[in-house]
Image (tube, rainbow, N blue to C red; front, side):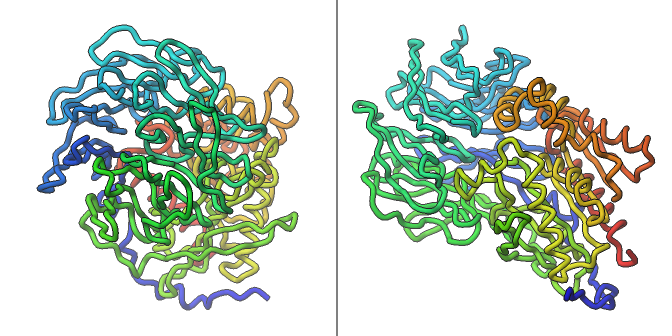
Amino acid sequence: MARYPAPVMCTRRRKVTFTPKRYLRKIWQLGNFDVSPDGRFLAYSANKGEQWTVYVKDLRNGREKVLVRSDQSVLNPEFSPDGAWIAVQSDFEGDENFDIYVVPAKGGEPRNLTNNPADEAFPRWSPDGRRIAFLSNRDRDRDNLFVMDVAGGETKKLTDEEDIVNELAWRPDGRSIAFTVGVGNLDWVGLAHLNGEVERLVAFPDSESQLSMDLGRPEPWSPDGRELAFVSNVHDRIDLGAIDLDKRRVRWIVENRWDKSMPVWSPDGKRIAFLENHDGRIQLRTVSSAGGRARAVSPSFGAASRPLWHPDGRGLFYHQSSFVRPPELLLQRGTRRTRLVGHGSERLPRGELAAPKLVWYTSFDGRKIPAWLFVPPKSRARNAAVVDPHGGPEAQVLDEWDVGHQFLVAQGFTVLAPNFRGGTGYGRAWRRLSDKDLGGGDMKDVIAGGRWLIEKGYCPPNRLGIIGVSYGGYAVAHCLEQAPELWAAGVSIAGYFNWFTATTNERGYLQKYDRWKMGHPDTDADLFRRYSPIFYLDRIRAPVLFTGGAHDPRCPVTEARQMVDAMRKMGKTIDYLEFPDEGHWPRKISNQTRLYERAIDWLKRFLSDEG
């Protein structure tokens, strides 16, 4: 029998202080970083108030400065081998058509190296500092590997793949570059030589192999350039291996039941750092490059990311966060852990946040679905709940900071964040359950999570909402249609809703992914129609808030506009928020604040105490 909290508790909630307007500008958002070759300076991207930029910090005296001041986002810094320059990338209002710039490390005028309307991103300096390799979709919207002379001159295209090149790392001798091809579709690792020759190095049947499978900058080469580390799901779970380039022989360094990512070879060649995923808790570990037992570097709770060895080889830089602690940039030397960049100076109101627990519930076909359950403190309980399906879809809700979850908890909502089938973290077979079924079984997993919340007494039947971003925004529309009686409100952020139009207008690498996962509109029209929410709007009963970014290259804003126009004509209860100066997700804190406030107000309105 379902048990619901006593209604009287809802009338005694304390005033909420953890709100977007008060805290978003005070909690820093951190991105990629790099360290100068002498280990003295740290360059990192962060948003500390309104827009992303790059900061340079002197690790000896703690002083730091802004490298580039711009009203556009500046991201992804990398020092030149002599430490004199920093390469960065910047786009226009989130359109993800980046240009690559080089800036004097001591500060100065940025110089645009690419100045191309296409996307030019992920700059990597050659070991001698004369060239920069990067990824670009300038040729028919296909991401390939290019290299240019920093001093100027012609840009050379090194790969010509119909699929997508998405990772790169210079070999220490500077004569070739390792790269990854694929976006979760039989990915393989190759080697591009500057003379134009391209080799396929690591490719296993019916599986994916990559340099990193994670955020950050791949550093997979042994210092002598003889071996290349990689990760692969050929054994179902993602394992860590290395290939000897002379003998073309693969050896497995770490094999176990957990997914691994981001192998980074130490400067002395003796150890490899990597990330290991234990049910969404990501631990940084190191192992002898010869193999053996791995040892932990980061805490067992939370999530580590973006590992990078100190140039002296005696320490590791990395990000660390958890559900209740925003990200920090740390340096670990032995047992000593030093915080280099914090998450801001504002203390968080711990009494308004919630550390979730990992739960498992049963879906429609008997599968157990893992999910994170956030329960607000009793003094704040609203007697309402929200399901939050993640984006991707090949992603996972990790034990890392997500301010959106905590804003909802502070308002008294119970939140369930399911890791539905087709996501990552649980091996290849789990991920492929959604092949040709995006919008099918995975949506039933999400719906089962909503019903579980009601059955367990976390909310009554008329107080359940759903919110999601990107693929999660797509999931919102699907779930509102497939189980219309279940939901009292929905918030769909930057979603897509029509497979025919989305796969025509989206960025090229996503077209490749969608063709692999779902087929082609000409040959799979029945499947595309079945899984396009735009065709079943009559089933939606709940009021829905949609949002979109005018420059979104992943889920084009025309997708949300289609839904809004059609539902308004049908007399549905809807609202729409569009950002004319943003892409897939708002980067400006002012726009993030508007988005969170509008979403929270919408859920409070339709999941109210009087509901």
